[in-house]
Image (cartoon, rainbow, N blue to C red):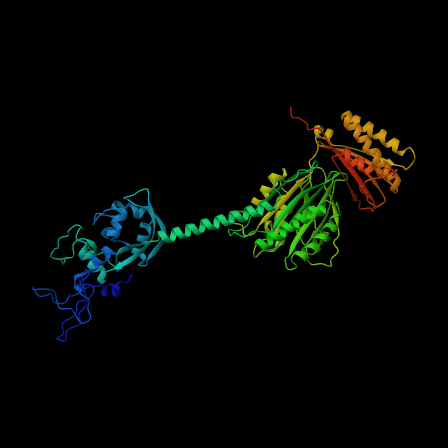
Length: 613
């Protein structure tokens, strides 16, 4: 740290005199012994007062010294010398913060704050390299008030032999130990850098080469408490904003996933990055009735309130369209038109899939989204990526649906691109990693979600939002198999068909040990649905009865695509009351078109809650 210019301009600093014309040599920065030479001063003042001021010179200029200036600066200043960093000088500000320090003693013994702040190793580096070192915003506890603290940034700078500031400090540091001069050693200033000069001359006399010009270290600390408090307030504000954004994001997601009878489902959402922007990732589980379940995941590109608003509208629309019990590709077709109306410039992707327990099959359609993955019980992973169209909002594209089997014990995963996409890496690499991870040890959906996040390296500092929806069709053991039953009957369309369907239903429900009341309600519902199908439907017709651990489901299918609706029958009408009766006695009912061009009409009854023993 070259302080020559700065120290030469301080009030009261010694000035170098110009070489005299008589051939006298001006004093150099150091003599042959290596001792720092004190620059020659101007002639002293007359006995009767100070010397006259030079033109334009402020009053009192000759009364100040470097010691005076450093003693009153608000920054902390300390000077050490030698390899053991003996204390040479500390100013008033340093003493107020850390207390009095004894000059001449090693800093390690008398200045513990330097070790606590991690400055001693830096000071060693300064002595070796001659380059300054800096540490920023270190917390300092006040010695006079331990309950209070401040923040300081520290600079450790080298002091070189012969510099005016170093010479003055060595002369002013009179609290250090005296070192008597010998015939071979010229006198040196007491304490401060003078001790170092003595040690250097002694080492030179002993034949030890002296190759460094750094004689000590200047420790300078500027208080940055105000800046740290402002930064802390800013961080706290950003933290609150981020918490609000994440709260908003989570409020737009399902607060509690619907739990279907036949599937186990779990989901996780990890907001990305440290900023306060809201993401557009979302997922949902929707029970459609009749034992069927819709599984949805989507991603609105970008971040911010606009992406969150689009995401919220799309999710709400999906739930509304799902109630129509439409095929997956028709749901995406409706979403595509809605996305164009919301914001034609906003890109969104989505997968809509429906699980039907009657055939253990998932029907799906994708709008530019990453493929659904299915893990078989043996660890084989299948990517359902055949039916994938462009993202939502493009318009003009006719989406189609595909299907994949979901066998007992199989697990499926829906996810957003934040799980597999990385900067500078092809997305296929992430998909392959996910494939291998999913093919590993099996586990329940909630365990799988956590495992996928760990395996894919998703942390709170991840730069993109991540949503994962996992579902599993469990294998039934002997106990649960008794709670999940299916019975079906082909309806031939003869006059005895309705009576046969009622008898079949009564026998099945009795064998399932259901209550008499529930059996009677089930028989009445079958009678009305079968009669309605015989009157308005087209063969082939079929009756299917299913029970789960929570409900009884009755469904009648036929080949006609005309969906019945509930209506209010007049007093004189001889028909039109069947659906109304079913809607009155059942806990839920509905209709849908089947993939073969026909329709299904269903109703369900809730079973009494089974108490755990």
